[in-house]
Image (cartoon, rainbow, N blue to C red; front, side):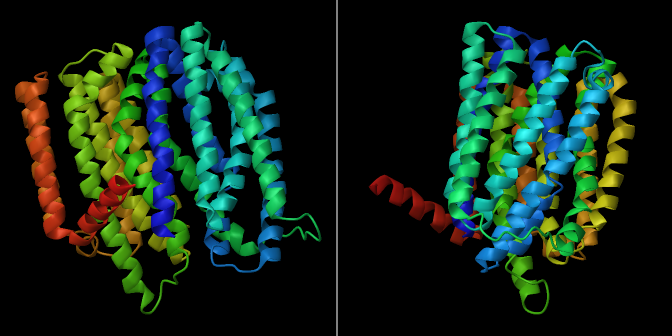
Length: 479
C-alpha cells in the first residue's frame, strides 16, 4: 500500500511539474502584476481549504484506514461532507460582508474585490473535492484519486495556455479553472454515490474525529502564516510585481518538496495509521520514520543541486527573470527550507499515532511568531531575500520543536553519514556555481560527476533502495 500510494502520487507530481512550467508564462506574456495576483489568490486558497475542511479529511483517513465496516465508512463520509457545508456557509457570509476589507488585506487595494469572490468559489469547490478525493485514498483506491488530481493539473495547464495565447486576463483564467473543477467535483460525487449507497444513512460524527482534527485547524493557519504571510507583506511593503518575482522563485525552489515530501507523506499517513505507537510497534514506526527522513534528505539534496545550478536560467527562459547572484542565493535559501519541512512533516506522524496533535498549536505558534517578527524586520531592509530567510528560520524552529514533542532524539532520526554527505555536496555545488556561474558546460560536467557520487553513496549505504530503483528501471525497460 505504501509503495502504491507513492507511485500514484509521483504521477500527479509529474503533471504538477508540467503546470509549473506553464505558470511563468503568465508573467512573461500577460504581465508580472497579473502573476502577482495569481500568487496571492492561489496562496489564499491554499490556506483556506485545509482550514474549512476542518482537517476532518485527516481524521477520516486516520480512523477509517483500518475500518472494515462498510456501513460505518458510509455513515462517517456522508456525515462529514454534509457538516462541511456549515463552515462554507459561514465563509460565504463573511466574504460577502467584508469583501472590500479582504481585498485590502490581500492586495493592499480595494480595487480587486472580484478576486475575493474567486477565492470564495475556489475554496468551496476545493474543500468538497479534496474530502471526496480523500475517500478513495483512505480505502486504498489511489488510482481514482490520482486520475482526478491529474485532471486538475490538466485543467490548470490548458487554461493557462488558452489565456496566454488568447491574450486574455487573469480573471478569465480563474473563471475557467473554477468552472472545470466544479464539473470534476460533480463527477467525483457521482463515483462515490456508485460506491456508497444512500440507504439507511445515520448522520453522526464520533467525538474522537473532532478531538483529533480540531487542534490541526489553528496549526494549518499558523503553517500558512509561515508559508505565505511573507507574500502579503511583500505586497504591502513593496508591490504586486515584486511579489510576483518572489512567488516565482518560491514555487520553483520548493520543487523538491512537491516531488519528494508530498508523495511520501501522502502514502505514509494511511500506512502508519495501521500501527499503534506502543510496545513493539514503537521501534517499527521509528524505523520507518528514520529511513523516510534520511532517504528523502538524499533525494532532496539531488534536486537542490539542479536548482542551484539551473533554476535561475530556467526562470529566465520562462519568464525573463534576470539571472544574478541574488537569484542564486534566493533559490538556495528557499530550497534549504525543504529539509526542515520534510523533517517535521515526517516526524509529525509519531505525534499523530500518539494522538498528541494538540502540541502542534504551540509548535507552529512559535514558528509563526518568529516568521512574522523576522518578516517585519527583514523585508523592509532586505526585500525578498529577507522573506526567504525568515521562512527558513521559522521552518527549522518548527522542525526542532516537533522532534522534541515526539520525544525522539536526533540520533534516532538521522544517520551521521547522511548529514555529512549532504553538507559537503551542497557546499561544494554552491562554490562551483559562484566560480563558473553561467558556464553551463562545466555545470553539466559537475552534474554528471555528482550523479555517479550519489549512485555510489546510495549503493554503499542504502543498498535496499538502490536495488528497488534498479529493478524498477529494468522492469520499465523490458516493458
